[in-house]
Length: 334
Image (cartoon, rainbow, N blue to C red; front, side, top):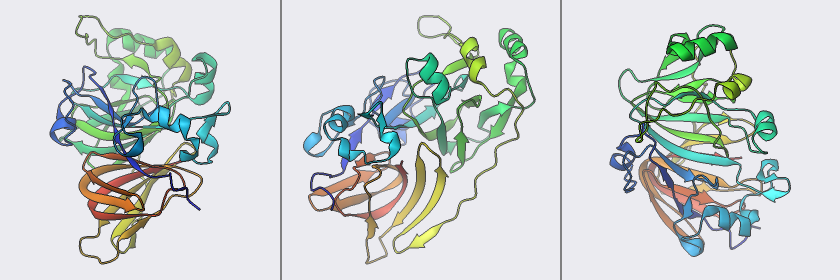
C-alpha cells in the first residue's frame, strides 16, 4: 500500500545566466526569475551546481536533495536510485532558452567520467523542442569521418562548423543525444532537456566568444577527443510515436533508455466526466513538467494547481492521484 506520506509537491528551479541565454523562460513560461539573461532553469535537480527547492507541502523551502536524503523511499527501488549504496536522484530536468548558439560540445559516458572525473556520472540526454524560430538548427555529430588531429586544426582555425551535421528543428521534435555525440543547440531554440544527473561538458568550439570579463571560455579538446564519436553520422530521424488514448488523456512514449523514460501526456478532461488516474509504482518517482496549459493534480491530502512551466515531483508509491485540466505534460521516470 502507498505510504500516506508519499505526497507530490511542486518544485522551484535553480537558474543559470549563461551568456547565450535569453528572456523567453520568463516571457513564455512565467518563471518570474530576476536574472538576465536567463539561459536555463534546473527544474528537478539535486546536483550541487544547481539545486531545485520544494515549493509546496510539508517540505516547502527545503532543497530537493535534503528531502530525498531524509526520504529515500520517494525515489523508489530502481537500480539507478543509488550510487555506492547512497540514495541519489539519477536524473536532472532542465528548460533551456538559446538566444545565441551553445558551444559545440560533448559529454563523457559513465565509465570515463567515473575514472577521470572523481566518480561523477556521464551524461546521456534527451531534447524535447518547446519552440524554434524559422530556420533554427541543432548540431548533431559530424557530417564525415574526422581524426583527432583534424579536429584540433579545425578548432584552431575556426572551421570546425564546416564538418558538423546541422539539422533544422521544429517544435515538438525529439532528439536522443547519447554520451560521446558531438552536439550544440542553435540560436532560437527552446527545449526541455532530460539527462543523467551530471554537469560534465567538454567544449570543442565556442565561436571565440568572451564573457563579461572579456575572457574566452576555455575549450577542453583533450578530454573531448578522448570521448567523442569522430565518425560521420546520418541526420537523426524522428522516433516513431504512437498515441494511446483513454478518457480525458492521450499519451505517447518519447524515449526509453537505461537512465530514464519520457512520456508525453496530452490531458483534456474538460469534456469528460471521468478524471484521469495517475499512478506511481514502487520502482520509480515521476517528474511532471507542464509544457502547455494548466491543470490540477489531486488525491488524499493533496491538491496542486499547476501551470505552463511548472514542475512537480511525485514520489514512488504515492497516494492515488487524479489529473484534471487541459495541458501537455512530460512525464519522466526511471
